[in-house]
Length: 405
Image 1 (cartoon, helix red, strand yellow):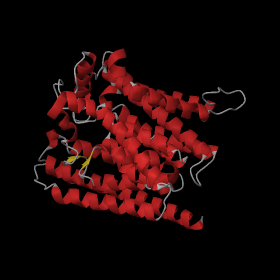
Image 2 (image 1 turned 45 degrees about the vertical axis):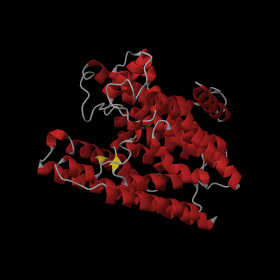
Image 3 (image 1 turned 45 degrees about the horizontal axis):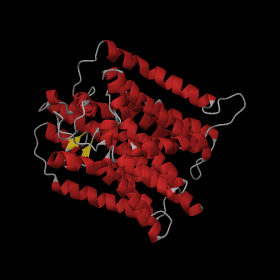
Image 4 (image 1 turned 90 degrees about the vertical axis):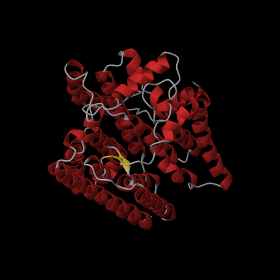
């Protein structure tokens, strides 16, 4: 409860400190924010309503694949049990990931449509955060027009819409924590950034990839240790009770941090019956991650593009990348794609169906079918080329602007 109060206090402070004070507008939301929230939800509602009326009982490999897990965890928590120990399914996510999904389970009796609407609300929050962050300015990226376009690009991207509704994935929640972490990092409010990094790590460990940006930000060694201590303390306080209460069962949350899963070419091959060794590809990821972290620190790349570069390398090299993880790159790509029409088209029109097709191609019902394997590999190559294009453009843009500065 104390962590929840701290979270609510800091989010509230962010919201109130950055409210738009324009004549004739709400002190809390501007006209643009109200409109983008309205139209973003309006676009998503047909999918949510359809699921509510016709598709609510058929979660599968593509549609709400984790639904049964969410309901199982919610039932255990609301019944006074302990996740990890009392759940019917193994829990392989940090504890806050289960607790933050309680609202749709409580207020809508766990209906699939309620979860999708809940995830859609986080899409809206992410869009409003993008708008307010770029209205204030991120390096050379600043201005109301740019801020509006960033929010629009993200919240109306077909892939973002599909992830929260058609797929029913909860990664939209952690996107908000990514944004809050980077925002406070940019504002040099490092202790708050450390707090949100820790809270985010209690939902998805993926946000921990950005830890080097916090540790190597400006400050004395003592200040850096303090930041690390805040993040570590939040994580320890969050997970320790479950290790005490659930014992070895709680170790399930770390059991599949390294595995071959998701929409990468490795899992595509595994899904079609090929045996792929894990160790060399894990080593490749570690080397790639350390290399990109080293270069963004040495080159003093600003936090926003640095986060995008690190996440993109993760998406390219890690062995467990689910399609919804691409949300982490899309949200940080917003200001860059607006400066490159090719990237804008690639990420808005080509990328969404390509990633969707990989999910279809690796489905168990298509296992062993050479046509789906070949088509899935082509789709994966398209996605990989687009992400590489994004990485190269971001690196070039960031280093050129840094050199000019």
